[in-house]
Length: 161
Image (cartoon, rainbow, N blue to C red; front, side, top):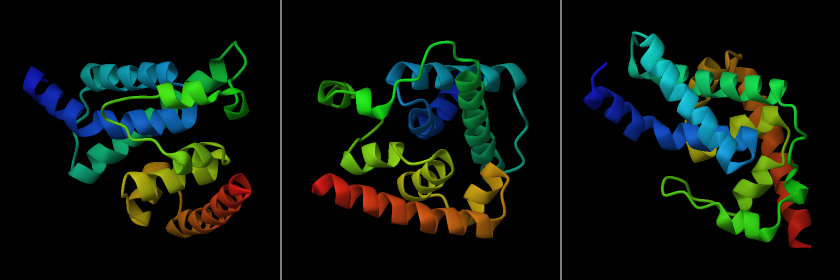
């Protein structure tokens, strides 16, 4: 893989991989570590992609798998969103990532809803693309989107009170 090819992958996939990792890891430094490892694996294995969809799915799947692996092997206790101060929220500045209250509420949802909603609304993935990336049936993704939207709506309404 040439430097130019790697640079193109970085420009295309850094932001989505970072945001996906952040939704899973919930800390900036952990998300950055995961994304770094994704690109190291891309360099190491240099998978031959059959299509753009295959490429996107590999990047998402690798990011999610690495997040899962890190969370499973973690020794220290996980930082809960309730423990984050407003200063922490405001310090989350990344040139590739926008944040808002909806995203922070989304991060508090259960994993199966969080990742589907995030990919659908923040990364503009179709139901079919999400199903392929997560290796789940399309109807399962549709159900998770519906239930996730309901939970998110309820959470946002509670926060406004």
